[in-house]
Length: 194
Image (cartoon, rainbow, N blue to C red; front, side, top):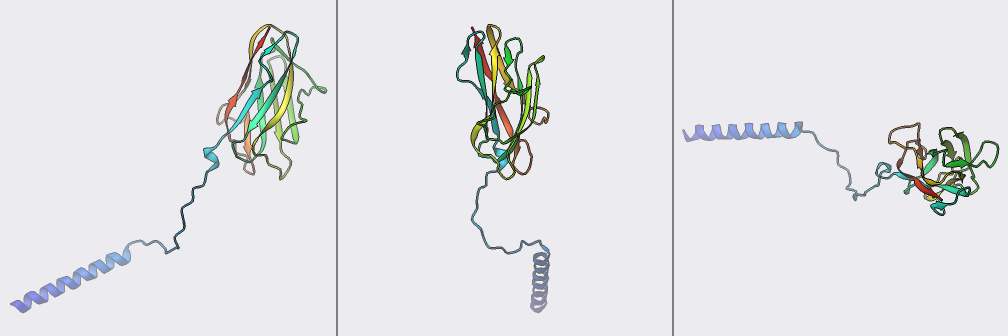
């Protein structure tokens, strides 16, 4: 009887080892690769560019010329261009033209080409596009363009950059080589005319 128990135990052990072997062989395995140190890479999605408006001062006299500077902070991203849509009140501000129907001063711009400049004085909108030269993407802080307005009426007024995340028909900043909009924030400007 002891012999029968020993044989049954040996058979059970063999079956158990066979079962474990089959389970081990059938489980998914990862290929062996050398271990690499972990590196943290900052993705472009975690950064977003800022377009802002500035002027040397905020208080102007009636009839005085107001210089408006459009600035870009790419927040470390390489960008190929911008679309800017500026909204202003035409009762208070009158855009001054440098050339026939072109109010933009681009002499100090970080961009080289301005394929679109469109102005609607009746509703107070200026829209323009600026692009870098091929292979010359921009990264950093810099001036996109400058505008000049004449102060027409006393009071408080504002200039705004129209922007809503996800829209493509307002202001945008294009990520270099991808065209993806990376604009995340805009800053307008309040002006006081005395």
